[in-house]
Amino acid sequence: PSVTSARYGKDNVRVYKVERDEKTGVQTVTEMTVCVLLEGAIDVSYTVADNSVVVATDSMKNTIYIKAKENPVTPPELFASILGTHFVETYPHITTANIKIVTHRWTRMTIDGKPHPHSFYRDGAETRNVEAVIRKGKGIDIRSGIVGLLVLKSTGSQFHGFVRDEYTTLPETWDRILSTEVDCGWAWKTFSGMAAVRAVVPKFDKAWSDARSITMETFAKEDSPSVQNTMYKMCSSILKAAPEVEAVDYALPNKHYFEIDLSWHKGTQNTGKNAEVYAPQSGPNGLIKVTVGRS
Ligand SMILES: O=c1[nH]c(=O)c2nn[nH]c2[nH]1
Image (cartoon, rainbow, N blue to C red; front, side, top):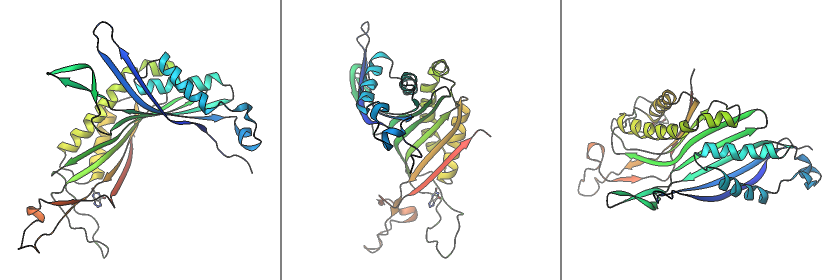
């Protein structure tokens, strides 16, 4: 038997970094969870217990903290590229570094109508994610994303005209609740190396901000005929806003809210146009996925 593929490293490395502006007293915080998985000439560590090729995962953890101290940790696309490039340039037998960064939200508090210099709150489980693959001598591939942005609209969503056959019970609707937890990603054109990444650093934050705004504005403004069509429009708008992005993808669960017929109780009308009280469903849920390219 032989190793067909292998990668190893440290997962769930939590990192917090504060940036202190001495002049203004304003402090800025970043909190992220990092995963490093390395590939290369490491098969013998599996097959014949030769540990001479093993960069200990503990050393990788140490490296993440050192690199976070030595370098900016934002935008996450830059820090992921710096971190991955370090590993493939430091160890001759390591050819690929897979870096995942999940950035958590610390939103600055507004106190007395002003941004507070050093107080923040966690406004949701939403994260800003980056997955970077750094291949020695072959460039850097980055996929940025938004995960866990939970949204709901109480109307402005329809679903009708779908297949009706002996398996269909779902009634057609022209007015339904739509709720989903956004998992969105955008893949950048391959960067030749660190210099190419550094050249577009400002575009990473702009793309994330645009993707987030486009997602919420399209979700809110569209009288959605389906999740499929609305997510396609989101992808198209993001591609238009970010020329350096090659493809955009969404995976959207359809988190259903079922009408409850209450007519058994004194003829109470609570369905169709009279529906006000609904049963939010934990599952089953629809799951709609798409990737949209430039062609
Ligand atoms: O937007 C929707 N797309 C679907 O494919 C689907 N199937 N059931 N409900 C649905 N809603």
